[in-house]
Length: 304
Image (cartoon, rainbow, N blue to C red):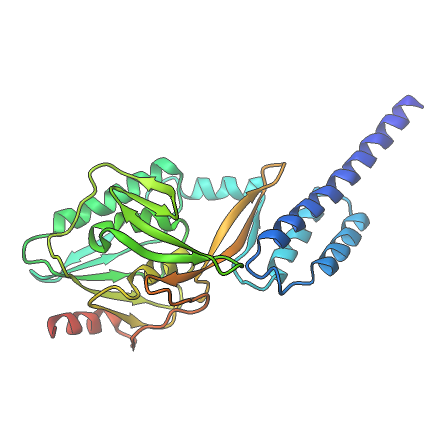
């Protein structure tokens, strides 16, 4: 009898835990989502609890929460189990390679890949990008092509810090939360910040020689998420023009919330705005729509 009672206690505890797990996750979504005023949270909660009581497995809880995040409608939120996270770490052991080229004495081409990695890899990537910029920069260099095509995102901060030699000090953009509050992105003294929080820092950051560089930015339909954040950094930047096609359309910021089993809710909590406080949230448009953006960018830079 004691053994049966013990097994029943485990089953009851598991059921209770999964119900709490679902409730806790929906609480996080309701309190932090950028679309918190557009979702019927009571309905989501009721339907989710009905589903978990029908199948009280952790796998079903994950399935329910993935569906909930998709139904929010921001097109950017998602759920990561521990297994998902381990796969991402395994797939991102090596730093991505950078494609770069000197077009002529004045024009440098840089293709910025998507980036995911831990803190050490983030610092290494930012240093790697800065060292390339430093090695290509001369007294004659005053024009840059920043190619963000196929940059599907990841972590914006190593990319931002890596490009700081061109972007220079100051505010480069903003996050806007559901209350309409602005939190700036800025570069200052070897580090990048979100508001007052220092996100990433390296030693001896470089600054290009040209005081007023001309910049061409290339984007396409696979420029997404943090790739779009880097694009936004150059919106409103002096002497800059965008070439290509509309970006993917998730110019929004995600925040990670860890659950008690190590799984993570990656929730859209902010919208991007550029340095002029122009608000995005969807697709970023080029100044010139074209199928050959690199060639058009070189033409524009040479004629200016």
